Image (cartoon, rainbow, N blue to C red):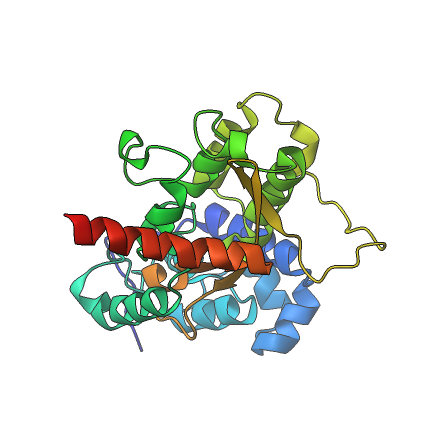
Amino acid sequence: MPSRNSAIAPQGGELGALLRHWRDVRGKSQFNLSLDTGVSQRHLSFIEIGRSVPSRQMLIDIATALDMPLRDRNTLLLAGGYAPIYPDGAWDGPEMRSITKALERILRQHEPFPALVMDRYWNVLMTNGAAPRFFGRFIDLSARERPRNMLHLMFDPDGMRPFVADWPAVAESLIQRVYRETVGRVVDDKIKELLAALLAYPDVEARWTRPKAMSVQSVTPVIPMGFVKDGKLLNYFSMVTTVGTPQTVAAQELRIECMFPADEATEQFHVALVGDDLKGAAHH
């Protein structure tokens, strides 16, 4: 049986608040959670009010039943007085090499269309060659600090915003995505800071943060995102991929975003971009 970590004091109040919060997020009563975990409802109640100290395995079972993200499982264990069990290293650390190699393969295979890897806060970690090739046609990427953040890139009047067709609709859908795609659907402090920064941009409306039902009259399977360049409209839709069965925090929080052309003209635009690059390289 694992011993308690004496260097980490149990924090009954925080533990109880975390459990109540996650039950609310997942829409589970103490009774439902009891059925899922085999822990009595009375015991769960005592844990939440700080009258009972759960074992590490019990907390792991509860976190699993609540489908908590790995980062939050670590937080729950800390609140219970136990050391975290899920590694929280750098996304490009040695233990992530097999993952980053797979990401590189995905990015490479998506050429000639843009693809990038982001963390949970939309910071760009990796791209294929097509991504800077595309965005560089609109703005000077070298003028933007690293790590580049895709949301700031889209909302900044000095970024991609002037080139986005129907920008208000796109901006609203992006803010909705921040909520929808946050790991575990939980808005943490950094997400709150990011949203506050986005809402501070000109003409961004606070009401966009509220959930909005899709129009029943929509006739397309996805919402396309258009960019206007030299009078030409380029249309895209995107697919987001995540790592399956992650065992580290970094692996779980990676997002691979692949942009696909939504029409033939946009597809040909990217084929031409590759041709332009090859011609430029030949001249050098």
